[in-house]
Image (tube, rainbow, N blue to C red; front, side, top):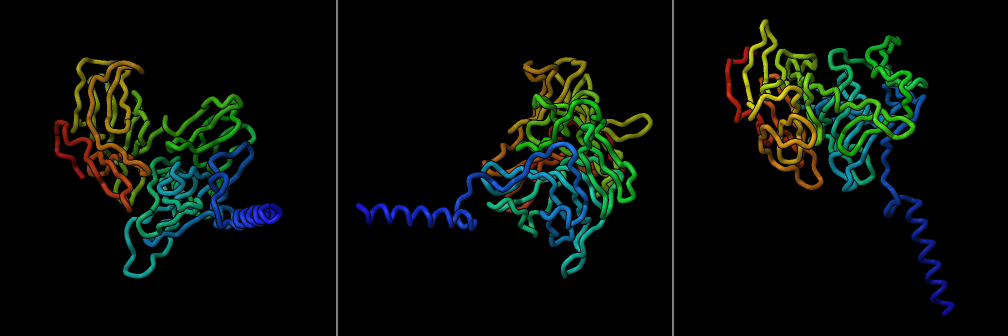
Length: 330
């Protein structure tokens, strides 16, 4: 009996040592999805030690990270991202230098380390400063007054969430990729889902009056001439001209002032109000377990769905069922 007890004790000690050494399962994932007030993230490798340089020259520096529920795979990070416009020759690419503060999908291993440096290049799905990239030494701050602010390396304010004095208690990145500023009751004060740039994530809505605006080009993140919006008569894509030229249209079964579109797993629907039957719908490929899907309005006018399949790949063109009205001037 004594020998059994000794064996049990030895086994327990070995297990504890293994866990402390990182050689076994961990009680919780090594992610860091939330932060409180008075937190500053400087855009430097020293300040953001969880950083990766990818083979195409892209750079990811994570400030907040929400690990995939599966424990590894495509996950959401909030931080500074610099995406290379094109490969630079046959050798290792030099890191790019102009950064967006935003949310990106990054590939993580079971230790929540960003990895897959060849195929797992960050997919930026929301950014605060798409038209005004910052450089090394810029900083994002969740201020004591509850505002999320981006400052350039010389201290000038580049962007602000505008939440000063609104009782913000902290920030977090959700498992759906939504960056949220919340108050002491955990209620949402501000969220990135309400301010889309050129992409939508599963579960996100494009509200009446909001737009998806394509990049100017593959290499230029500034607003381009093409945008997608929900109007009273349907989901429409336009060339920004005088007057705007509509080139795609998904009509509704009835006119609906205030209509909005929602991207769900397997469909893009347009509704008049929450809980109401859809007025129009496009069937989409469903999202597989353990992976991530997003749609992005491209500078060529297409609304493409991308999915992680051991690498990022376009899997669907959402607007192919709509009517074309004009030739897009590129």
